[in-house]
Image (cartoon, rainbow, N blue to C red; front, side, top):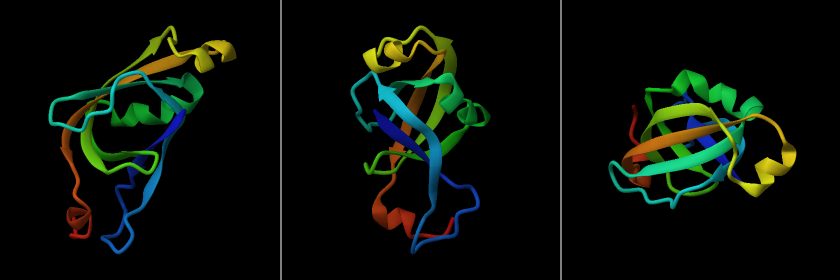
Length: 114
């Protein structure tokens, strides 16, 4: 399981960009490639994923665990029957989300004021 982090909208420019918890315990069900137009598909418990609803249809800056930051649109977030074994064991409602990659954010780009 992974953590999906979202750059806080009111984050000050570097030296420390502030990423906040978007969703705990996501299960990535697709390969993570960070090329433009590629998609990252993930599943998350409904209770954990509801805070992402306000981002649906919007582009934001994300990070999965400690991986590189990337710009993506949350193109879908819908109730689903989980396919990940860990979520199946919990027997709780789940959401499937799709992030459509726009670009990878270079560390040097992160230091520039927004």
